[in-house]
Image (cartoon, rainbow, N blue to C red; front, side):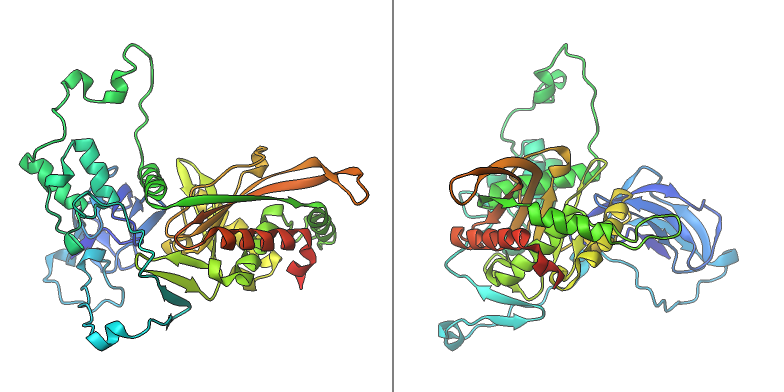
Length: 440
């Protein structure tokens, strides 16, 4: 039986074997952990689904294999013929192996009929034929995937001379790799070996250390570059008065029951309250609770919020599902658990994929304000700064100092227009300045 590299998410294409628990020739029982893998987002142990003998290890520790690639081979025990086994655990297969359904035929009558929202599952598809801001294309109209662009840039391949093998003629990474192996025309002559890296050539004679990119940093770089190149960002900012929110947090934490050692049962943070407030604001402004999907908008009936968590070598955004229905205490407990497992790279794919919006909080670092880059396909991300004492005018013309926090909302203009973004931020500001609504 071939042991394959498992599929751990829609965007994961390969995995790195970081540890083998078994050696060639070892007996294997069903359920035994065979090896540990690391992707751009998580680390996990992969168990065997059959008993037998590990006859061959094809991907050694430290090596990378594509999703669906053969990592090892398990033979029958004691050299016996292997009977067919009907396993209840299906072997993972690459996404490309899944059959693609045929496109439905559209009649003339259907094409001329008025388009209405399609109610499918927990969201609503709103078709937008006139707002087509698809991915960047070549001058000849051919679409190029981000991976293909990166490979072409690194290899100096002229994309305009390639014929795409993807859907609708899209140029994919495999097309560029094939061109590199076949000696396709390049955009520039190869540099001399001593100057193969144009950046390094600028720093000749300057001491430096090369740090190899791991899978996470490569994915973060590719996705953020794609976001800034293909998503029309705009930003709206507002200052929220935190006096009532701070009082609510402090009073609630002070009233928390304690165990015999004096440890409180919970400890709410400003971030917990901001997550709840943002979820409530998206629920109040449902038109902003949506994402762009090439030729339509998906408007969701629940609010799933991603939370940016800094980890070694990059960033993860675990998602709190149905945040608008959860109490602040539930959000606090869940957030602590997700953040801890994110830092140890133990999140499951379903715990960090999806989400309609995100929260990025740099206030704990003393940052007063910043603008965050959207995490596609999400259409908004809230950048939260530190609470600071600032002067504010009071009725009658006097001045008093209050604790204020600057919030900047980054929006995908294809989904959220300026007025809609302002409406969402205004709703958020109102909830934060009147926080008792979070406890009702």
